[in-house]
Image 1 (cartoon, rainbow, N blue to C red):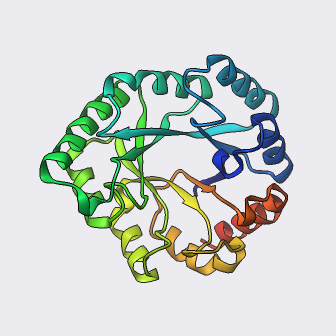
Image 2 (image 1 turned 90 degrees about the vertical axis):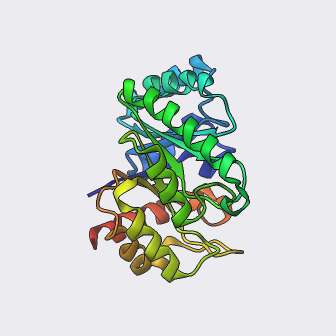
Length: 248
């Protein structure tokens, strides 16, 4: 069964120390550290502080949530993210695939993303890492068919998916997405929301169980973006995540 944890960007306003403290207090053993605020790849001192806090508390890094965009950022600049993941102690890195909706890509642009993806995957494989693409609106992996074409185009065991439901699509679409992308899914971001509102995770227990039963290869199921961005609801949401995982 997948391990559980928290995505640090759920609480961008909190310090890494406060996030670690709250994870310890709620029994969440893993954190995906975001590279935008909490764990910038060039801030080696901060990365080492986070690693020391992990060692002191028993918290571990599930994955490194980068904002590197495949097809836009230069693959030659990726080494610093790999180095940062070494300090944090994880072999999984989250990336974004492209910079616009899949429907807006030309064949030439798509080919560029896939070529860069192969380059990045080769770098990752050489370092014993795996890259997971965000399953996110406004990217080349915003649609199941497009995501599969990217996975098949790159065709590397070091290149997979970070799955989450699409809040703008139907329940049937999301079930089909989970089923078809399952062979590529390394991690899952867990949240309960629709196009305009966030809800307690407990409201979606059975829906989430139906997703996760289709994703047995996922290593981590990570809470992301709780209602109101309120850190004080984390204990409730963590308990809801533990409860739904027990029913798998």
